[in-house]
Image 1 (cartoon, one colour):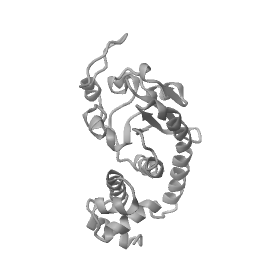
Image 2 (cartoon, rainbow, N blue to C red):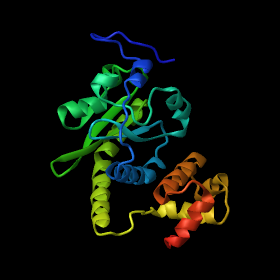
Image 3 (tube, rainbow, N blue to C red):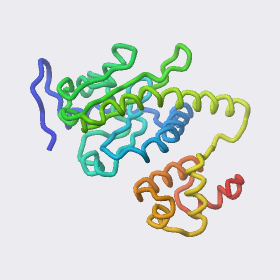
Image 4 (spheres, rainbow, N blue to C red):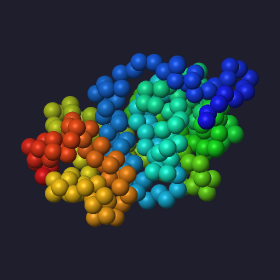
Length: 244
C-alpha cells in the first residue's frame, strides 16, 4: 500500500496525487501524434529488455499522455496512483524526474532516495525534454527498479528522443501535406497480418517469438492508429487503407 511520507512540506500520498489531477485535452491532434510516435519508438526497444522498466510520456506541462511497462510490473502499476491525465509537476506529486526536468529545462537523472512519491522510492528515473526547435512538446521518462539496468536505460533514454522527434516532425509534415496520418511499423504490420489470419494473441506471440503482453500492446497501438475497437474492424480498415 502506498502511504504518506514525511517531507519538509505537505506530505505526498496517492490520494492527494489523484485528487489534484485536472481535466486535460489528452485527445488533441498534437498529443495524439506525440503518443503515436512514442509508442512506435519504444516497441522494438522493449522487446530486448529483460528487466523491469517503465516508460512515461507527458505533454509540455507534465501531464501523463502514455505509458508502457514490463509485464512483471503490471500489478504494481495498476495498484499505483499513476493514471493517464495526472500531473507530474512537483506541486501535484512531489519531486520526481519529470518535475526536475521541467524545472531545469534539461535531462535529469533522479536516484530512488531523491523521489518524494512513495511509489518511486525504489526507482532509478531519467527524464528528458522533447524539443522541436525552441519548443518543448513533452517529456520522456525511462525508469527501472533494477540498479543493474540503470546505465542501460539512461543510454536508451538519450537515444529515444531523437527517434521520437524525427518521426514527430515527419508526421507533422505529412499531415500538413494532407497525407494519411496512420502509419504502422514493420512489427505492427506483421501482427496485423496474423490477426487477419485469425490467430489468437497467444498464437501470434509464439509465431513472432515475443511475449503475449507485447502482442496485446501491438494490437492496442494498431487499434488506436486505425481508430477501431476490434480485430475485425482493424482488418476491414487496414484492407481499405492497403495495409493488407
